[in-house]
Length: 289
Ligand SMILES: *[C@@H]1O[C@H](CO)[C@@H](O)[C@H](O)[C@H]1NC(C)=O
Ligand SMILES: *[C@@H]1O[C@H](CO)[C@@H](O)[C@H](O)[C@H]1NC(C)=O
Ligand SMILES: *[C@@H]1O[C@H](CO)[C@@H](O)[C@H](O)[C@H]1NC(C)=O
Ligand SMILES: *[C@@H]1O[C@H](CO)[C@@H](O)[C@H](O)[C@H]1NC(C)=O
Image (tube, rainbow, N blue to C red; front, side, top):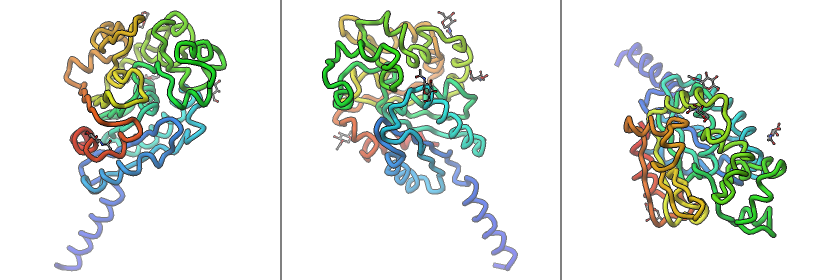
């Protein structure tokens, strides 16, 4: 090789380190409640091995105790971090969002002119939460699930993230009145921007929903696939939900053009989704292009 060829090769290699020459889109990870940005490290490591050159970003905001601040505040700040990153990567990005992080990501996707290609919703309570986990017991030790609405459907309750997506199937009037986040992004209550939210959401190429019956935290676990209880606690699947049928935020549109993928995966507890290599290889990696 001549010096010129060597110099050219070095130049290309350097440019490839700085930009993405791998052909794989950058991946953003958003962590769950009470966790921090480290939660994404294992997945981003695996991705870097399988798809060398992929740029990864794990959102370093609302870590640990701060993860309980209200969803609106989280979506606003995470939007601006993600928008900065997306501007630097006009080729588009993929999102992997875990648990509560998936509701933050849905908010971002509905509220900004994003360039997200695939959104992987990894065990996220997309249709809300109605189950008293240990986490909630720490905050409200004296409340049982059926009474939590009394604390969460209040001004104080709406100051914490869980209050914003607490969905009590027997208290739907109060849910619609109080839920400052889930009822709004679903256009179940009042959202003056619902049309824009829908336009933004349907820019998504693909939504991959992963969850399963042994989760133990997301309740009902079908909420990870947009299913939820009716007032008798019977399961109503996504396609029978009014906001799906009315296409209130674009889910039906996405589905009708083949953009919705559902994976029901047994044998995985909530805290293991992001560190289970079988889950990664079978249900995450194939969608990262
Ligand atoms: C996305 O939503 C934002 C906020 O409502 C809005 O300003 C923007 O116009 C929307 N983008 C599209 C393409 O509708
Ligand atoms: C959400 O949090 C932000 C920042 O702390 C605050 O400005 C806003 O008023 C809060 N909204 C609600 C509904 O508590
Ligand atoms: C949101 O709901 C309102 C009131 O029901 C309705 O007028 C509006 O068309 C809905 N938006 C979308 C995008 O479906
Ligand atoms: C990992 O995921 C597989 C399903 O893909 C499941 O069968 C297995 O039990 C999981 N292992 C752990 C430790 O979560």
